[in-house]
Length: 306
Image (tube, rainbow, N blue to C red; front, side):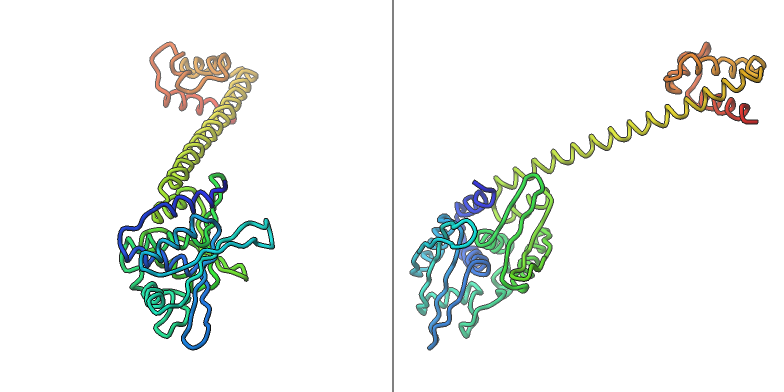
């Protein structure tokens, strides 16, 4: 089963407590998977076209909560994978039209709305419910490697409304226009986890949060490893230059003329080419600091080049 299916099944199992949440979720579902059919004579019907049976049953139960009759039908999609699709048909009875108006799916004149009015998502719980409905209707989720979540809309106005709505809950989505549809999307395991949690998919959110932690840990480990490697390279190059300076002083007979501390550190560097400054300090006859060793080696290099 794909992550998209897991997401729809998890969300479809959530039971909204308030009527306002049901209306907001129904609105999100309609604006991603619904089609309004104008039949003439102020007659209207609405069809929801969804990907699996759990979402169809969820839509059916939400409508029934408001005493709206609907019918679930199935058909086989001709293109792509010839998968079974589910349609929820809602005839336009007066009571149904009133509820669809309250959900921001139809205007007062029974015209389809590209985006619902602000009252539909006035509360924080309603904003999460609207996102849940949109995810149920047209979400695509991939990951946890190369994570990507997107919700498709037929119009830019619908996608923009979702982006604006979830932004009020500190969830940031991007927009992309693909010609035939517009998608609100988010990438990155941590950002996707936040969007899923807002919609109520807490189990899947935990999966992506775990992936975000693992990725962050690996990144930090790689940075530390790269830093250690860079330090080793710098230390090796410095030691090579110091040894070259000591050998140059020896060839010219100046090594034996050096003061005792410089002579000592020169011989120690020749004898221990791979030791760090701190380790060289420990090899000195008298207690010596790392800074003193650094100054002495620097002096040797200056003498060799003078």
